[in-house]
Picture 1 (cartoon, one colour):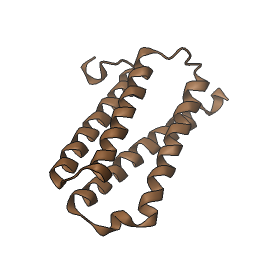
Picture 2: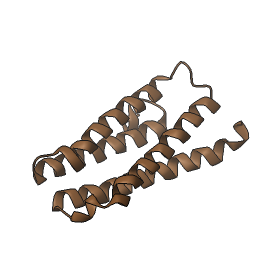
Picture 3: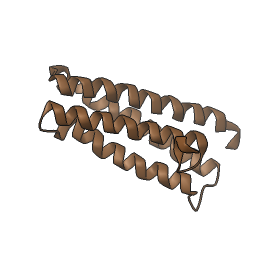
Length: 128
């Protein structure tokens, strides 16, 4: 299984970037009140991308025998939960465009933190 590490890692990274790009597009549509946000494919595609992202992430953790979880991976998972909550506010639950825009920016900042944690393998992220 480890022989597929680089393929799985690159699929995970590709899914992560696709998730971010599509989130930014959907957040823009949400803030500007675009009706395309209600299209069926717009509602389904994020679930497909995020399922792939999570699946490849779990596969990587299994391949590398990450149990118990190292601190950097625990920080990444915790930040992922925060990102999901902020993303929900930015796209669905924010009452005003200003709230949706603010939470979208916060979600992107959390995503950047997650990237730093993944790249540097420390909870300090970009500060290491």
